[in-house]
Image 1 (tube, rainbow, N blue to C red):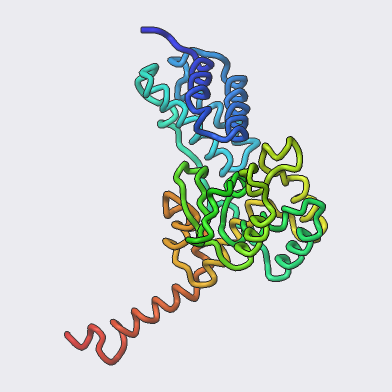
Image 2: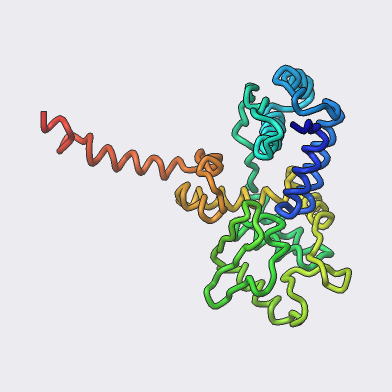
Length: 297
């Protein structure tokens, strides 16, 4: 039986999955696996034992939050599962290691006072396309790369939908295109050049690349004078506003493209009125003094 090393496994896994992930994701995965390799060494896979991994986990726990530690352990577990798939090892040693709780995750959404200040700062940005990008994020819950990589064939004005074809979960989805988001895209469509497919093209490289907004976004957040805010928090804001407007968790899961309802549960605390109304209806139907179950005793 050929003996393979941890370094060989990481190289094989990264080569196998390179086309499945965005370049930024692939870079982060490579950086993490290189750090693991420095910590454990290019040892044979048969020497990657539960005891070795427990020592590594202990060192990581001293400088990482439980949620970050959980993500790193689960990712490495996935890579070691690939070694089992290749039949390089018989059992994944990381499956014998206790994992910390992943936590509830971070939910930061814009308040009623922050939202208009941020939108005003985006309108005043030296990057004119920043404002429509932000409005579409707030109106659809799209991720940054999903929006920036939109092409005009993905915008269906007749059906009134945006089609996100390149998503984090690799499952295309369509979201309603309404209100100001639609009006902004219609205005952009009137001035687009037919040879440019990007809805939000870069101002450089002859429009051959999508727009880069990181600097413009950071500048707008500072100009708005609001608490630190990531672009991804626009997605949280969309989901939070939807939840507070009466959307169910299943509605949210569908429009956000969540494969597991568990991922949508982070917004469940924003549904108190919806939950209260359901409990009230149940009480009226089954537990009221005029026709509850006690009447049948």
